[in-house]
View (cartoon, helix red, strand yellow):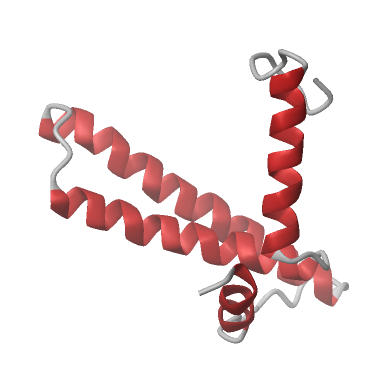
Length: 115
């Protein structure tokens, strides 16, 4: 499956319920942003429990759970890309260009978007 195919199928499942904000796009972005934060938190919590409950051992069952959370994260990233008029392909390519530029400039470490 390509990013484009994924993005189209993922968007077909989008449901938004944020009547308190005037802008339809902003409502949808808020919903997707909150969902992304929640799913990232679920992924983070599972990693924490690997340390706390499983002595750092990552089992196949844990990997499957992590992959499910990553799928949920990908859905929200896909939807946010769609809402901002971008394809996942464009987002992925742009990110690689940025990372390669930082690597070439010796700026992979550090802070800030404008390194």
